[in-house]
Each structure stands twice: as C-alpha cells, then as structure tokens.
Image 1 (spheres, rainbow, N blue to C red):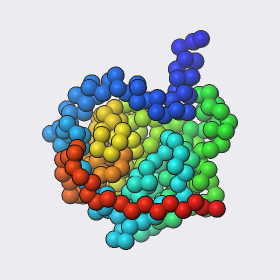
Image 2 (image 1 turned 180 degrees about the horizontal axis):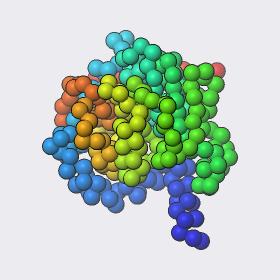
Image 3 (image 1 turned 30 degrees about the vertical axis):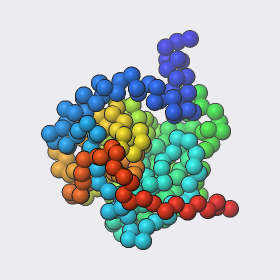
Length: 271
C-alpha cells in the first residue's frame, strides 16, 4: 500500500471515529503547548490556555434554545451553538460563514438569527477519495440543506476561491483540526473574509471546556496576523476560542472552581 493510500485511510478512520484523534494528540501535547506559549505576551496564553470569557455574558437575558441537535458524534456542544447564535444576534441582518458543515447543525442553529449563512465543506468526490462511506457523505448538511438562507459551498478551504463572498460578521472555523490546516484557514479568513468588526470562532480549541487542545490553539495563534487589533479568548462552557474586535471580561481558568453558573437543560424530540 502506498504512503498516500495509508494516509487517506488513516484520515478516513479519524473522520469516522473522531475520538481516535485523542491518542494522536497526546504524544505531541507538550510540544504544541510550548509553541503556543510563545504567544504568551501578546495573547496572555498560560498553563490553562487563553483567558476565559463567560458564555453567559454573551447570551440573551432570557437564555436561548438550540434546535435541531442530534447528540451525535463529531459535532458541537449545545453551548458551542448557543455561542454562535449569540454572536450572530449582535448585529441585525448578520452574515455568517463557516468552514466545516458536517450534519449542518451549526448552520441550522444560526440560520434563524442571521440573514445569510454560507457553509463550506469538502465535495462528495473528495470525501469518497478519502474512503468515506456514502451514508457518511450523505449526512453532510442534513439539517441545513432545506433552509432557504443557507448556501452550501463545496471545496477545500486551502484552495477555495473566496472572491466575492465576504466580508462576514461571524466566521466559524471548524474544518481540518491539524496544525497546518488551522493555521492556513486562520490566515485565509483574516486576509479575505473579515471586516474590522467581525468576530471569529474556532471549534475544538479545547478537548473539554477548560482543557486546551494545544495543536488547534497553536495553529490559530500562529495564523492570526500581527496586524489583528482584537482580543482572543476561550469561551467558558464551550470548546471554542473567540476573536473579538472589542475587549470582553475575562479571567484565568480555575480548574477546580465550582460551576458558576449551572445551566437548565430541556430536551424535546423534534418530530
């Protein structure tokens, strides 16, 4: 078997079983952390990653509801989607762009609070070349395909022509989570898709809330241009990092702090 074939099979296995990535990441965690800490002076990166800003400060006063949500593997937390909805609500008629469609939960979650949603994913042909099963391919955009204000784009974020698409008010980077891909996606987003008041969210910048995923964090830190004038945070209770053009309240993560606040969760199957 050629090296390329082995690589494609390995990527396919990781895509079908994202939890396997934890074993790969563990070997290089210390090295990625050391590289991320080179940005300590600029972005206040420390032992526990970025300074944390409370999710609750961004949510509407009465809270919010996420729907649809599949509770399936490889997706976002409900709190991640609440964050995206909250950021889109901040500007009436918001425009939203994301890299990485998967089941379409994030696009669908934002669609009823944003004017336009664009979501970019690898094409079906590219996924087949990676060894993906057709059933897996068909799941992409499951929730977002029927929505009239969601535009589905197909291609590789490394080479896709973004000309004429931006700028966007909210950008969600949730594609390939390896260092080089995160760095490249970050560089392209900042160069081609933002205006001065845009916000950027990276998914899986944490393994669990409060536990940095150092490879992803290093990729985004190395990808943000030196001219970026905003602030960078981890968002409490989520797996996300957030670039904000304006300062937000924040503090260093406290690993053994009591949950404050706790959340009420209501689960209702949609028929």
